[in-house]
Amino acid sequence: MNRARIGRVLTLMQEENLPQIIVSSPTSIFYLTGKWIAPGERMLALLVRDDGTVLLFANRLFALNGNVDVPLIEFDDTDDCVAVLARDVRPGRVGIDKDWPSQFTIRLMEAREDVRPVLGSGPVDRARMCKDAEEIDKMRASSLLNDRVLERLMGELREGMTELEGAERYLAIAKELGATGPSFEPLICFGANCAEPHHASDDTRLRKGDAIICDVGLVLDDYCSDMTRTLFLGEPTDEMKKVYELVRAANEAGRAAVRPGVPMKEFDKAARSVIEAAGYGEYFIHRTGHSIGLEVHEKPDNSATDETIAQVGMTFSVEPGIYLPGKFGVRVEDLITVTENGGETLNQLGRQMRVI
Image (cartoon, rainbow, N blue to C red; front, side):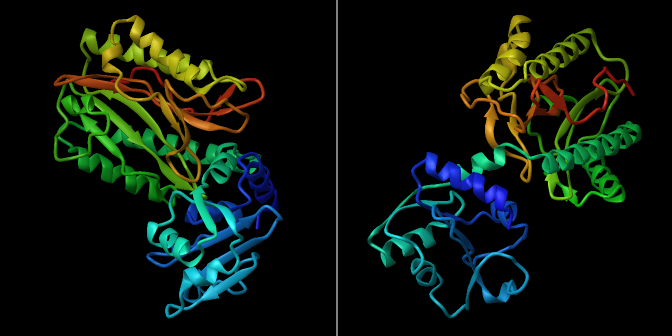
């Protein structure tokens, strides 16, 4: 059990007036206990109370006895698992993890009419927002490996290759170089498909004159990376060059704005204003980024409406883009972590226009 992280959660529980919380997300349980558990349809719950009590409720078939350093309460398939948990829940408010299936929440309410469930993901989500030095080291390593994998992939892209073949090569190279797996399915997009920000790779073949978007990420030592680079097969048009340089400049402006004590929305504004000033604002159709760590999408957003104040250790993407329907799109994405003096960009693959 990571006592420092539990301590941060307890402090945040007090701030949110939550005397007890039920944590069910396997990722959050790993964050607090160091143990990955895949519950499937069975109940998994970590009960944290403001008196410092931490109890893990898990099915006996997970064979956790002796394998976790958290007080463990086990149950069998034939037991009423919620009734087992209910015995240790105190009367009054209990914060429920946003990921806990409603069937368990409803059964807890039926078993304990003196309990009032409220949304209670905040303390753990907020604790996970600010990465400690060990986490930053792991995220830096994950991003640098992603750099190497994408550099290899870009060197292998050829006319006639399909998007799916490009995605398969990314996965193969990542595995070869030591990644545990992808942090999301690689998005390899050619030509007009680049105008769809989340286009799923398909059988479209790469042709001369196409823009190419590679949005890829991997998992290394439990931590995710995420990066996007746009390149071109053959000499790009003047419009492609203009749009590329705008997006690259927006990415640079968004990263340069990062520092502690500033609302997240200001980083979005810094990137978006570059694109809007050039008359392409209507074609930047998504938030500037998202937080990342043990999961590829975490809280808070790097968006125009997020008021969260940036703190040291927060790590998120800066990924402005311009998408011209039926023509092409450009996105340039990097991960950045907030430092005492500004921000550190975690991946180092070049952002200069690349033509193959």
